[in-house]
Length: 219
Length: 234
Image (cartoon, rainbow over all chains, first blue to last red; front, side, top):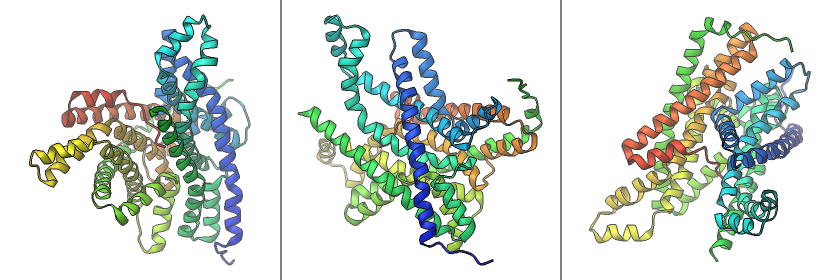
């Protein structure tokens, strides 16, 4: 058997597998966004037990490795009797991981809205729901954009961990090609370049949004 | 669901778990010390020399921060032997973690240095400080005190990320878990137990870092360190 070398075909396979990385990132951000939003609201709720439960959830998720979340959802789902493809375990774990961090980011953004805004809207006889809908969340969303985009970079990078349970995304595709070509330096460098091509623009976008936000508020 | 949990099997593998915990602690502490020292050095060099050195340091920081830790480990562990440098799994893990943490530390400390007000430096000059004294007492120490909580959050994240080193066969805690799983098939029990151990390690590390912070910078910094959650670096 002759060894393949790392050529255009192999690079094409890497680029092709990038779509799974991106799909997983989108799942994590949408799922984690919904769950994280609920936790962020709970974290800023009136009832103390609700606040404590949300704070505990955030502390636990941020205090355990993403790899453990992945293993627990992988084995947990199969234990519960679901015969699911790795994509489901990967998507579930990335969702849980993202929710813990997004909840904390968004809590900060909700609390960054000045207290007077709450008082003013209350004096207009708005219900709590109306306060959130028309006064607080629109302002919090503006503040939350830069750190949320910044976190998306972390999610893209951390989807590589799902390769450990055999989900074929970019990092796993790199391993597969390395097994066929035995040119690890070239292969993983190419993998790193592809991740960089996705992550760097997002990082810069986050930085740009951050600068624009501060420019707006200092005027 | 008719599954019965059997945590009892874990007791037989106590040694494996303790061995894993010990290696996790060792590579984490070593990489924190080395990575933080490299971060201080690079952030300093970058702000003092500027020019091409600054460009190089910034490029290093951006490259590391925009690629996954797992891929960095692969390059160190599988890639370096191809260039004639043979490294073991533990050493590769340590190198990978240090390189990764150095980039994040540089970025955090850079922000601290840039937050030092110009008037502070002028005040130092007015007091007749030498350039080195100004650098030490006015810039670097207050800068690190300011970003110490953020730095510690990054250290905790690195300790948690050390679990990824199991993918290059470093026998740390996550690898111990995988080994016991392969022996007993009690996967769920094992990963619950190991997850709790990681949680305890994260809390203990944060408390230890807060103590160091108290010793170095006083009580206020220590309190902020305990309260800080991992910050997300853009």
